[in-house]
Image 1 (tube, rainbow, N blue to C red):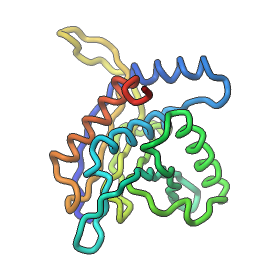
Image 2 (image 1 turned 90 degrees about the vertical axis):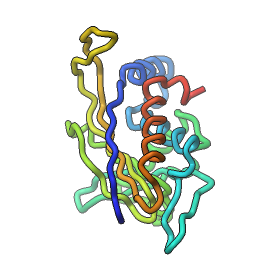
Image 3 (image 1 turned 135 degrees about the vertical axis):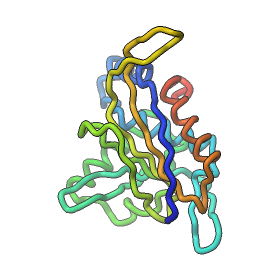
Image 4 (image 1 turned 60 degrees about the vertical axis):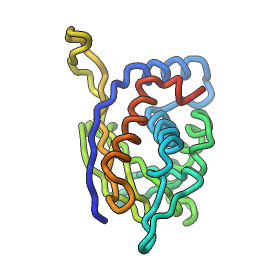
Length: 202
């Protein structure tokens, strides 16, 4: 797969505040950071369907539905359970289904069809205090997001230095399907969703 990579940095302040507010309001099932990332990915794919595609033989296949692969580390390797129709689901439904898939993946209780048929994947290593990495595309998918940890760092805002919670994201792209401008537009939409998170839950 001819890979190329795009990296951006996301201000996670508003997304984390929204998560805290939702978790304070709803006691049944907490929203995790990964849930926000999955929702933002699904919405960005809805807006940029050219990224939700596969290279098949000598042609590009565009998918009508967003099926998100969630990379889960096991002792013997990596497995990627698939969250079906993520582009049509709300944040809370994504949270419930992702939690179930991840738990059953770790318990080795997934059916084969539950880790096949993804159209795009997300790998989050933030909980391991990794700042930035690149992920390998899972064919026939054309892209994967590699998510680093959220850290407090000084940034310049309107000429002043302030401390913000920032997260680095690297997108691996199959250049046969996604060109630089298309990948950049998708990654920009992903960033915008997290920096203005009401957009992705309304």
